[in-house]
Image (tube, rainbow, N blue to C red; front, side, top):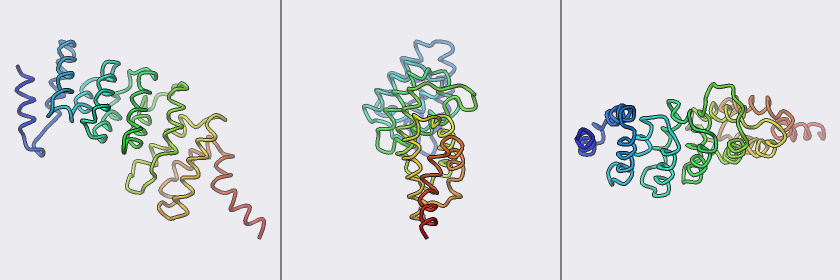
Length: 231
């Protein structure tokens, strides 16, 4: 059928000529007409030697649901797709219809992969982006576990914005203080060794002062103030 023809053309094309949008356009339309067939084709793609590395991107042809999460968890366990492929789950409101208990295991599984912390952070940062909704304890504890592990680097220009979003969402209240302090210590460390400047992480620092002002004062300014008092 049409899927066999499209997927065969995709696989045989040179990497620079491949357009996954054509496959996703077909899958998105198929999902509306014949959802069982859509599910079957994605199950087949996840087992296909050539298509399995593209599965996370193919899965974004529709909003993610429980079945899609299970498929992606299996894909992660098999290690067929690069961790960067899962970055696409952060965009286009793909995760917006998932309940938190469905999203949390997927984000956790991504975070423990080599290079997965940044990907997991982006997915969490974009989950229900712009919605003024409270988040439950499952995602909050996950975000607090991930944020202190984020590698702070000047190479990632989106980093300051994404971390600041998560800080404002999940670093509120006494339960978050330990995680906030761990993140603040990391920020202080990379500023002290000149890996980053204050300008590189001004959004994150502003967010931390907004939600954890005492911890931020203590970790970023406290020892400086102590030294000045002693001198």
